[in-house]
Structures are given as structure tokens and as C-alpha cells.
Length: 124
Image (cartoon, rainbow, N blue to C red; front, top):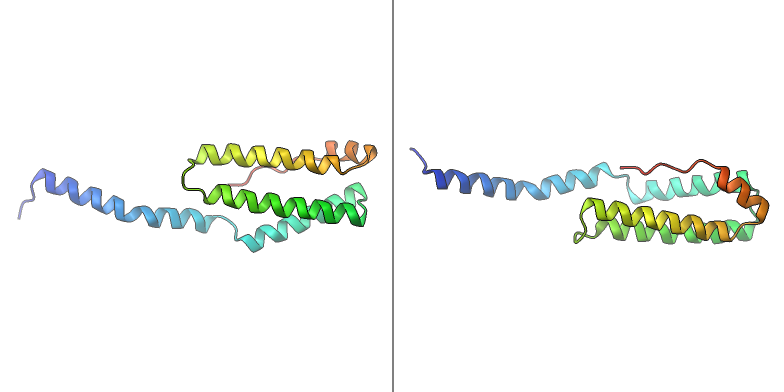
């Protein structure tokens, strides 16, 4: 049985439309789980604590900042109204704001060491 050209186009369009949720699920599956990110954040905090000789109060404050930043980043990435480029820009801005907030909690000597630390690259 021969389908009209319009029928083929409708079938192809419907198939692509139905496959869209699967591609979004695959993208989400590629991202590390929230628990894994929390573990990485704890490792980063521990690394900062060692490199900068943070006080217990500084560790607590920076840990809180990192948790808020992580939650805000998840909210940005889960926002379906933004395209990928917009999400990446917002997350980059969020990270820079986080760096400034952390820096504000440091002593002048700690700031020098903090500024010398390599920045963590953005992950996919």
C-alpha cells in the first residue's frame, strides 16, 4: 500500500515528536546524580579547607554557600524555559558570584592563595 507524501511526513513528524522525551531523558541520565554532586562539593570544600587553612566557621559558611549555589544551579538546569546557552551563562554567572562570596569570607592571605588556585572547569 502506497502512502501519500503528506502521510509519510505526518508519520515522521509524529515519530520525532514521540522520541523527544527519550532524548531529554538521555541528557538527564548523562548528568551526575545530585548525591554525586554533593560528594564532589564536599571534596571541594575539604580541598579548600586544606589549601587555605579555613577555620571551622569559614568551612560552615562556605559549605552553606556551596549548597545554595548547587541548588540554584539545579533550578537553572531544570528550567525548561531556557535554552542550553542561556542555562550555561546563568550557571557561569552563578559560579562567579559564588567565588566572590567565598572570597569575601577569607583573610587577605587566604584570598591570595584562593586567587592562585586553578578554577574548576565547567562539566557537561
